[in-house]
Image (cartoon, rainbow, N blue to C red; front, top):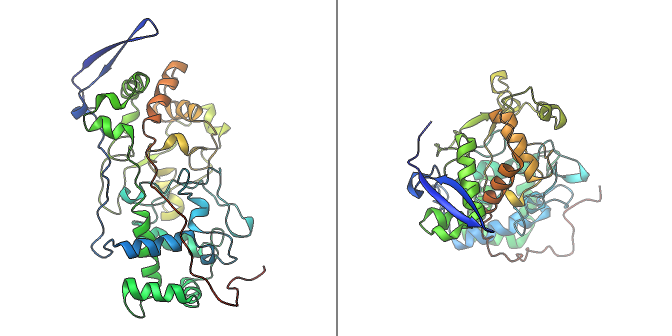
Amino acid sequence: MKLFPILLIVLTITGSLIAYDLPPIKELPFEALPTKPLSPKDNPTTKVKIELGKQLYFDPRLSIDGTVSCNSCHHVFGSGTDNRALSIGVRAQKGGRSSPTVFNAAFYSVQFWDGRANTLEDQAKGPLTNPIEMGMPDHASVVNRLMTIPGYVESFDQVFGKAQLNIDNVAKAIAAFERTLITPSPFDQFLQGNRNALNDSQKKGLATILEVGCTSCHNGLLMNGPEMPIGEAAWQKFPTFTDSEYVQKYDLLKDKGRADATKNEEDAHFYRVPTWRNISLTAPYFHNGSVKSLEEAVRVMAKVQLNKTITDEQVQSIVAFLGSLTGELPKMTLPKLPPTSGTSLVGND
């Protein structure tokens, strides 16, 4: 474990002295969030592509019954999630996992809890044909439906060229929009040298997570591990210590995690480490959405991942720090969706 040079900070709060240790900012195991992500070489970002992707992201006609859009499970006017334990898809079906936030997903090296997609483009294709999520029979059905909407045909011609309305370009447009969903936070200002960006409670919380050991997994740009090449991740077993009462209480072993995607039993209960960014907004917590409060989630993590029982004071300090990761949400307006004339594209089932 890396040892940090220590700077002792002593603060006066409500008349009492509270001392805690913080390393110099440059020695912290975190990175400030860029304001813009890099565009893939095969999907350069353009203004018109972003606008097309935004329309597709909000359009429920991409689902079989016209009830579910990307935004249904990943609300960009709120937390980037739906704040449900399990997301609801077409015909009111419940999915098997809680929706991760779409905010800052551009910086992930793999997508989904189990990392079964490498890129945002890969991820965008999955829910369209998932029978529980958006329920389209196949990707050809998605494309055929879009081709009956003149406004989309015109937009795809403009963005990608004539006769280029295909599933790969649908995914590229959605991904281009999602790459704009970046949420710089007060903690980023702190990492850039503004010591006043965090209040005293948040600074104490920062010292607490270093002391408790949370940063053994939660470090880097998204506080989800070191930067990795696309297609790779810092996988972590969850839960690690299974003899805790929390494991049974919150049913943490029911889901096989990455093993469901790889069919390799060695991957059982391994997950992509979730981001800490905007975590105060994204309750309920964990892959199954089983924990409603952030305070309880902190206690559970300390016990099942670090085998530590932490105090209420430590919990409150950590929660205070996590609040500094709530970022400025992207400015957003609803897009105008291209209409159809005199016909409906979705059935009555």
